[in-house]
Figure 1 (cartoon, helix red, strand yellow):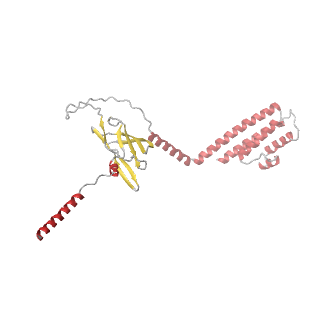
Figure 2: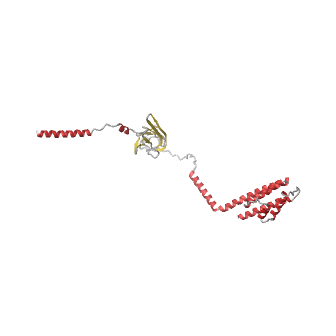
Figure 3: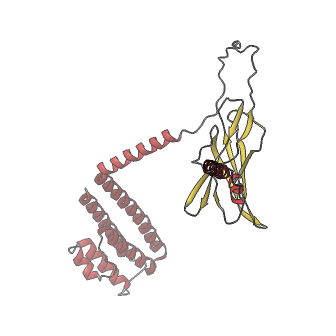
Length: 318
């Protein structure tokens, strides 16, 4: 009896162990979160059924998700193999009735010769501090060949020789023109640095010559007007023009100086002393007669002195 009880107890214990092991191996039912995680967060599709080598094709990527879920679409640095990234455009996120919609259109091109091209792009999902990189379901597009297929795979098609030149549109060669412009600027800069003193001297002579010619022309015009009208106003204008020109020529302003100060400034030059003394006597002393010929001497003396000063300044500049 004791042996039978012991055998029954061992058999019962083994049955319980087997039952417990079988219960542990039964898979648990999938939850709603697991089912949602298995679904793709984005779907892609080609807007064309076929594509040629090098042709631009548009790939539309769409994602419908909960508003709290943060999704990042791929950019130009992502892999689009066997395609190459060209550009993209996207729409802002739109949320309606508790669902958000993200959409972007990628412009791609391929140079692969496979008959069927498959594309799957990675989409990034942000969940707190975790980052999930989920690929989109693969989509396919068929390659449209333009070359005629040969009858036999090993047969080489007959080639036709054509050596006739085809017209090619001329294009502006920016690198060479920019390099040439840089060379010209460097050469001009070297010339300016090397001949800076000489160029400055030549420019100064040019300005002096131009100003002197302008002074002589204006001075002769005032003298002619005075000769015709015998008006003291024209004489005053001619003397004022003479003072302004000498002030510019020598770099010292004499327009506000008196006759005595001007004569002392130019070391009591006889022509300046005689011309200004006659001018003061005519203008301020009211000793002017229309038949008086001394007034003509005034203009000649002042003009000759201005020419001597111009010659002296030009020699000093050399």
